[in-house]
Length: 133
Image (cartoon, rainbow, N blue to C red; front, side):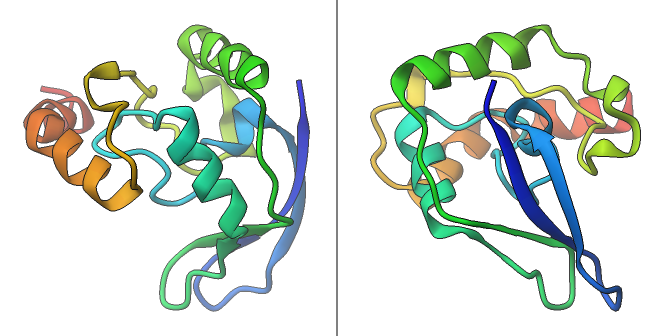
């Protein structure tokens, strides 16, 4: 599995350089998924190609832009499906909910439209899982 070197930003703290497996890295990127749903490869690669952001008034993460192949994506998805993010401890920040997948929206070409449609369907369930109800 690919390892990623990146910087993690927190509000009013110096950036911290980190190296993590891709399956851990995805749980350390703010706003990667939408309502707990992991993005399809074309949207994931668009996010990776941007190189992240420092976050400003909130958390952020930056990395050298890159993309993953279809095979790497399938391996990553398999790892995420079997990974309990709670086991990552302080290696990642966003581990309260395991990513899920919904291919119903994979045809949507851009992140903003994808996230909007995904959250229309999954928002209530996502908030229920976050609150433990």
